[in-house]
Image (cartoon, rainbow, N blue to C red; front, side):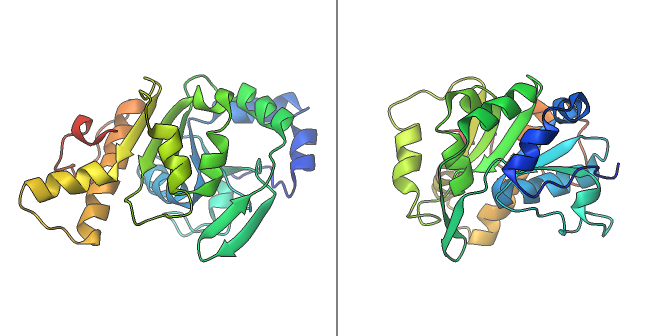
Length: 230
């Protein structure tokens, strides 16, 4: 389905939210990616399961990225510009400014209770969203990055995870635990090997959460899913 909306600002998003049709568009979305890693996962998932209704949250429209058929994802991904105040401070490093909380809650209220939101905790946008209680009540599939992946967000990640039990509605793929298990098995995996296992866990969890048929396209995880959750 060709995307009917191409928002360029949070103000325009506010105007569209007044339209019942757009509220229905948001309510139909089954998977939402926050940040670039989540979007990469979602593009591949959409390629294998084209019937899925998908969207993404980022600070800029990434609709120019190609999907599996070489078309821009603007044709079948709904861009949700909740985050607009972002300062780029380095390579793949950004600082997220204040969020319009009334707009955030309005958008979250439009989402289905069954929507699955995915993203890596090395993404500043996702970590900003996790500050909001209403966001953390959604079904979330997150990834805890390796220790050396992000130094600037490590304190925020530890603050979110430390000394608390992860609620049942949230699953956190723990890449550090994954790496430790491979070492215990006597396997010293290069980053490419960890990445391949990580991606296998992303898709295996999504297939479970969305009740999708198993696809031969995705590799089977070598490690048990439950063992690699935080």
